[in-house]
Image (cartoon, rainbow, N blue to C red; front, side, top):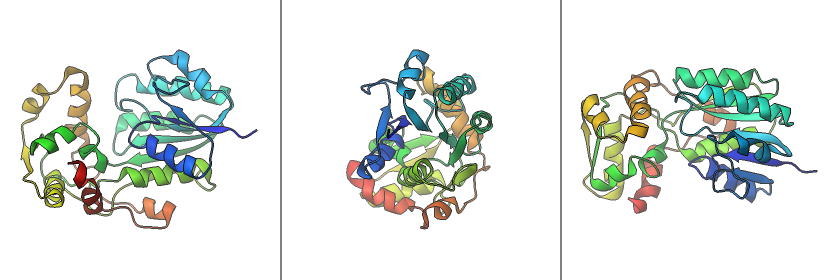
Length: 264
């Protein structure tokens, strides 16, 4: 029997790219999402067991983020159920420089099965497929971030590394820190987007309290944590893990901006 690979967050930024790659390669894949034929919902544990049936390998992407309260309890419960259901390989998407995410990593690493952790930097695609898109389209990106450099990483590279870990050998017990090829401040990233689009798009640093006041309550705490705690310089260095896994350099932000320009 050929077992499907379960890709949680299978319609998200990394998950849908992983699903596409697996299908192109002819690898049986099961999409784990609330809209899937066999639904998976992190907030509804009754959906977990059916989604895990006859699965041996899982890409674990937690929604909304491993840093939110309750994530470790969910990861603990899901991991225990997955192993009890016959899963033998877990690939966890984690956040780089997030203490809370590392607590979830420890749970997966202690599960007694093959594991790989993908610690990812800030996604390029946050500017084009997520909450920063509206600001980019509006011509002004206002964030509580100073001149702190970030090694923005492309979701395409994360997907390629994930597929290697899900389907290949030699990745068990590895923690990969995934970064792009250079450091950019948010102001510099916005400048590259402006150059790629030929539009006037500006970056404005705003006080944290003003930024928080403008956020929807359901995401305010998480975004404030990501922008004011994680972006404190702790991640301002590059790694060679994308190259180590894929044998090529990671995708540059300028290349991403050029390809995404039509959508902006």
